[in-house]
Length: 158
Image (cartoon, rainbow, N blue to C red; front, top):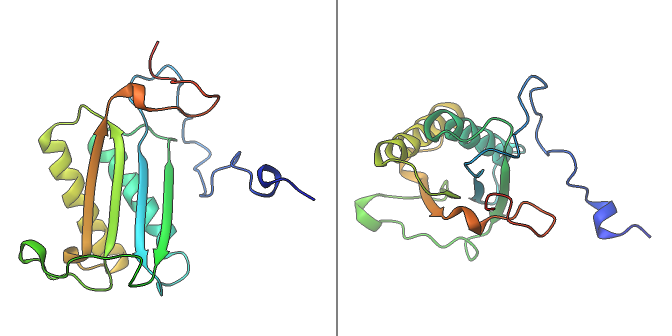
């Protein structure tokens, strides 16, 4: 019987990487983001992966996320598993809600963050027909010592 590690190998990315895309350097000073994307069930096949691709591309373009670094958790929920106020701050949200939470190292400017939020909403709307009212983004910044990418060590601190 195969172990859990053998049954689900994380050695290869679950998205198609452009073969010309550079690999991340282990000496880089900025940490990659961990992005969690939550959707209501019932979206077309591949929709979550498309959202993940768009979010990743926008993060590379707007806040300087390194090429080749992509860590995402994409989940689908029923109504009881994704609870969102339908009118908070006067924004009318529906079942098409896409909740994106990105944890990254601190250090981005307010202008970079605003560009990130705007571009994610614009691209999801243009490419996947997600209403901009249904794009909820939360950026969580942490210190570099809060990351371990494996081997039980904090790679970004000495």
